[in-house]
Structures are given as structure tokens and as C-alpha cells.
Length: 319
Image 1 (tube, rainbow, N blue to C red):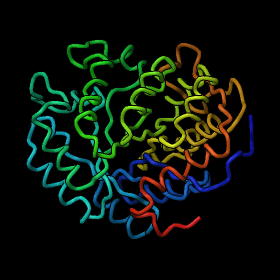
Image 2: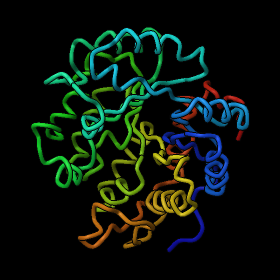
Image 3: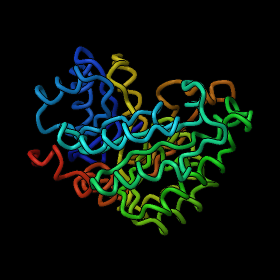
Image 4: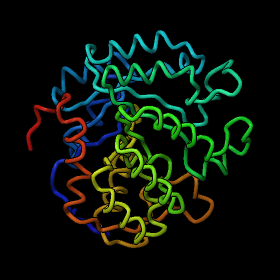
């Protein structure tokens, strides 16, 4: 396996989660070993938020979670008020999560709920009015629909989940969307549809969280994956979906290693450096490196994030 990296510049991790203050310092220390100089911090704790602002000025772009419970019950006024306060509170963008399993966490969800319901339009309009980017998670890996979401009457099909997001993007061309996980479409057979979305919606950018999902799916046809990354190199942010509350070194290290092997090397057949629950009973996940050009790596790891978020929070960082 390659032991030196092709890219030696700064890295912006566009998808991390920060919780309590007592777990954040260890996360940052390990990230720095892998070249991470700045990041989006999706906030889960006011204590952690205040600690990060004080201890790491200029490192974080903060994302505020919008209330899933309120959105799921069409209780839109508190969400709109929250959006209006977001920037003055020190956040630069908002986050909402609608992976299909969200329905297991919220009670009394109205029958037929979808994020494209017209009742939610005022929320998206508020994001537009406040020029607030949105990280929005929709759908999950194909493997999840095979293993966990077989009941389409509860979770919908993956195509139905994706269609809801497509409808929202169609209505709101002024919102800057950061859509995690390659818009839930890193599977090789889904890349043509993702291409159509990127061509059709110039206001969206995608991130590469999570490491196992990217490594598992894009490694299945490295040639096609490499061509995709090069073609859309201006529209992709490096991201891991790491959470500070995990706290274990091997957790962080394995996920950074997986992506750096995938993007930077020519290595073939490298075992994913941590267990993939989706494939542990079917041979495990292997990584086939895409050996991306240096110019693409610079965009992926740093330059695209600077274009998207360089005036928010990390403007004091110079590299």
C-alpha cells in the first residue's frame, strides 16, 4: 500500500459533527495529522459550539441543525425564526437530515409526508431570503434499502426519496445546496443520474462522505469513477461524516486513510481499513485507487471549499 501521499496541501473536511467540548480536541489533533486545516462543524451541542469558537478560531464553518421534529410535523414558524437567527448566532449554513430511518425517531408523522410537500415551501423560501446554504441528507446506500429498508410502505423506495429532493431543487434554484454522500448516488449505476443532476442544477455541490460508502461503490469501476471525478471536479467537496463523540483514534484514522487511498493512489485491492457492516458477510470492501490528477485533488480537498465557504469563518486561514 502507498505510504506517501500524492497531495501535500491543506484539506478542508466539509462534513464533520461536533458535540461536547471534551471530545473535540482529540478529533482536531488526529485530523491535523491527516492534513485537515479547516472544516464544517455540524453542531450538536451548544457547549461544543462555544468551545470550538473559542479554542479554534478560524478553523470551523458552523452548520446549525434545523428541527427535524418541527419540519416533520409542518410546524414551520419556529424553523423560519431559527433560520432568521442563524447567521447572527455565528453559523454559516443550515443542516437537515432525512435519511429514511428518520421515521423511526419521530412520532405521529403525518401520513404521506415528503420534504417536497408544499407546506414546507416557506422554510426553503426563508433559506433563500437569508442566503443560507443548506446541507440536506436524503436517501442512503443501495445496501441499506436491501438490508434495512425493505418495507417501502414505511421508507419509500430509493427512487422515491431522491425524487423528493429533485422536486425541492427544481423549485429553489437560488439555494446553495451541499448534498452529502454524492447525493446518495455514488453507486456506479447511479452516476449517470447524478451527472444529469449536476448538469441541471448549477446551485448544488456534493460531498464525499462517507468513506466506506465512497470506497465500496466507486472502487467497483475505477475508470468510470475517475472520469466522473475529473469531469465534475469543480462540484465536489471532500468530506468524511466523522463525529467528535466517537473519540477512538482508529475510527478517525481508518476513514481518512480510506479516502486518501481512494483519491490519490493507484493501489488495487486494498482492504478497507475498518469493517464495513454492509459487506462483512460477503467478502468485505476493497479499495481501488483512482489516482486523481493533482489539479483535481487541489479542488477536491481545498479550492472548492474556499469558493463555497471561504468568506465564512475560515477567511483568517492562509495557505
